[in-house]
Length: 210
Image (cartoon, rainbow, N blue to C red; front, side, top):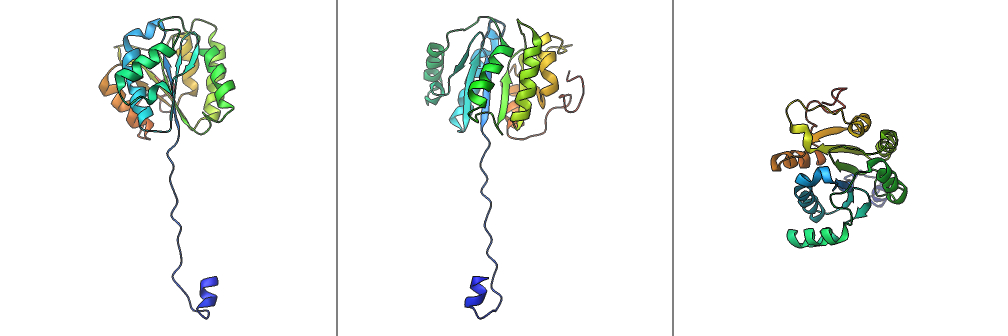
């Protein structure tokens, strides 16, 4: 309008402001318990690649919650894995997913780390304790995050069904339930994180999520 007034009231070319797009934060929760030992190294290397791409927070879960984002800052993958190994005190231990998810939400969700983010849980879903705290934590996470993705290496096994108490408790609050057992599966996971269509049979497409 001011430009039109300066031009004697004649119409001028309208100005348009382009909308800046900012990638969403990605949060990775990587299970390093004993049952995940065959897959943990590959999943952490996947996390390192994601962290190098920017706006990614990485945590390990087992019997403790450990933020390893700084360790992932190393350019060299082997150096990053060595730094993670030094930082994580609970390799190949037990699993307390519900308790640690609550800790994550209390400590980091309050700071906005998970708010509006794409949160990826990389775990087989084995829970040593009562599964109800995990179910409650997942409901809380789902309300907070933009999307919740769960990558389970066991999903690729013939006849697999998410019958473990922890996995069954978590699934109703998962937007995409994918495999995580191989390089090809992790490439598909990366596509889902980027916003690709979830594979068929995810909880939002099939009630069983099998």
